[in-house]
Amino acid sequence: MPDAKAVQRICGLLDRGEIDRVQFLEQLTRRMAVDVGCSRAAVRMLINTPDGPALRSMAMYDMVSSQLVRAPDMAGTDTAPYFDALLRDGCVLAADCLTHPATAPFVAGYLVPQRVLSLLDVTFSVNGVLYGCFSCEQRGQTTAWTPQQLSLLRQIASRASLTLMHAISAQIDTTPGALWEPSTPNRLMTMPMPLDVVKDRRR
Image (cartoon, rainbow, N blue to C red; front, side, top):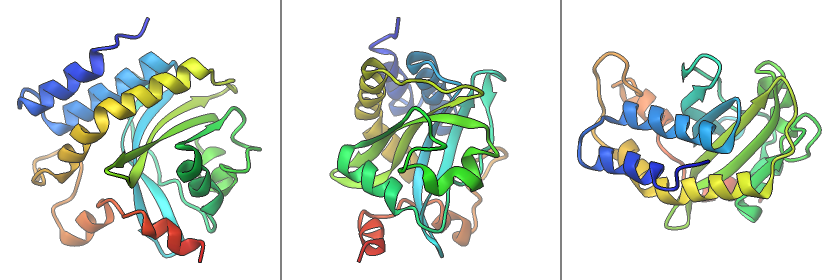
């Protein structure tokens, strides 16, 4: 059974300086994967690309390898269907993400190569500004996401969003294994984009 206070404890550890942001993201994404029950769980940031809005993984926890793993960007030439659904509903729930209209932009570039068959995303927003999503993936087989799983991910997002915002706004860590490179161009590519980035695509 999910521990209702687990995310609050993880956030508290970061707030008190008992863990760093890399440890925070690892513990948070692992908690997401365990509580929701999925193959992989990630925190993704909204970024801007020449083709429009895309999602970049800040951290992804894989249940098979029991560790953080790298993941490519979720990008496409027309990602409006996904972001429209995310903004409208606060989530994208795709039991079969290879046929779901909202996830269609990511099929060729991300979902098929990563063997992701089901996707559950909930918005990561602070003060009404969209910064990305909390994401759960199922690989190898489809999953009919339940209302309970969606509710759990929404609860995690609600509890963790503000702490996560503080974590990504903190001073850049340039020690080995840091989440960001210290150079300005790389830092800008990992900064959250405001909501109007998505709106511009629909004008």
